[in-house]
Length: 385
Length: 202
Image (cartoon, rainbow over all chains, first blue to last red; front, side, top):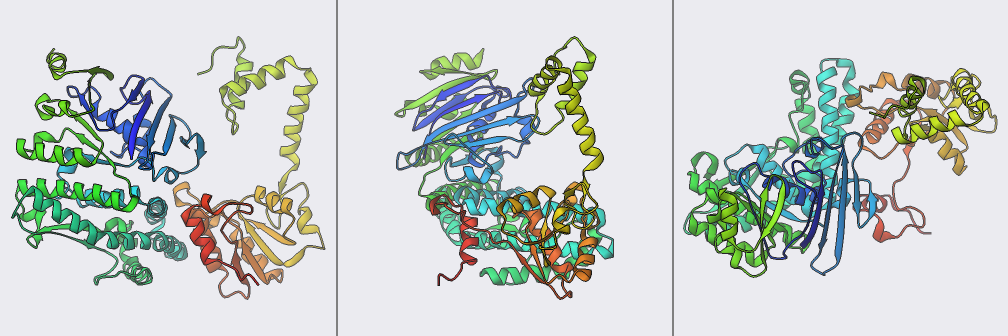
């Protein structure tokens, strides 16, 4: 997949932007707070029809505007073009379009714009909260499968209904029937999620272990597992998962009523990362966690490729301060050979040399506006005054 | 928000109109100005029609559909089969099904779908009335025709459980490929449902 051009209007602090991008490498230089991350957020908004940072739609609209527009033109590996558009109003529903035709659901966008993000948060993937690793799994599967994404959205909706129900009526014993109905919805949409996560685990582990070995030779074996709240014993088949899920829900129902929120389901499941058979987040060093996180992200790019036959574009947002020079260069070169790259940084040193690569394009970003520069010398001058 | 129109009364009308579904402030202004410039009776006719509609149109005591009598035309029609009941969310769903002229039983309008997020609970739906009808009207089959959303499915299941123990068959509408539709344009979830609900050819 290649991103060809983007149009942004009233998107966060950015000026009206119309940008043709390089099929190989795009560099955005700017001091902090000038709009680098916002630009990458805008470029990737149409992957799942929402900010990848989880921002609310109303927060992406420029403060003095009523509606934000995002438009992307790209092409797939068969060189077939696609076009995605979103109009996000402050009031009312956002409108999404695929190839100029209105589509009703965010999941209708899936399968076109494919992106993997490396940003400072992601560098702490293995050490951060379980929530973070769950989102990592969900993102990998959603970009690769419209069906997964649709089920995930339905699951979240059913879960929100159930949690609201528990909060307001959890202690009413007469309300038993309704709770069971919401639980059935959780089973219906949640079981396929658990199954898909279980299925992707082995190939993901294989790809991550391979990348880890490349990043940290002789560093030990990286392994992944999923701890599911639904079952103590491993479950694989859909009907097994459904049965186990139903049993756990029944067993925990009194506890859930007391707690007044949901305690079991794929939204509580954990992706565990082990190094040398011990949890890396507690036993691994800083360096090991960093390398393992990057290995997981590389595995994510690889798995998206295997699921969709499309190489995702890779966004590198200010991650090199976390890495030493040799690793930075190795990672840049490895990614450059396979993926269209978008790099944002405040430090020229992070990208020195890259601008010489063929078809590299470099922009300065300042106060939400973009200026293309043809060499880093001029960029240096911009950044310094 | 809207610019001054030189008359507080005109501005008030614009404000009221723009609260209507599908009408923004621009359309509201256009409608208001039209009513100002058109024949005086136009505005009076419109106002009268709205007041009369609110005075006389009501929900059917039996099924909840729209009517001007205590009971709607469908409930009063002796040719309709009283043993089959079709459950719908809104009175407008009755129109859709009647337009297609496929169903010869009677309806029951729930008036919404279960949704704790919107504060809609079983007591807010016409479920007691439903149970009462099933017990009193000799209903043999209940067809649940609610939307295929998360809330629609949950409500369908709730209805099915509510009627467990009553001697009625419950069914739901099939989901699948639209008539005249091409397979390549059908999404995976719909395709999967269509597949699992497949019918014998001969």
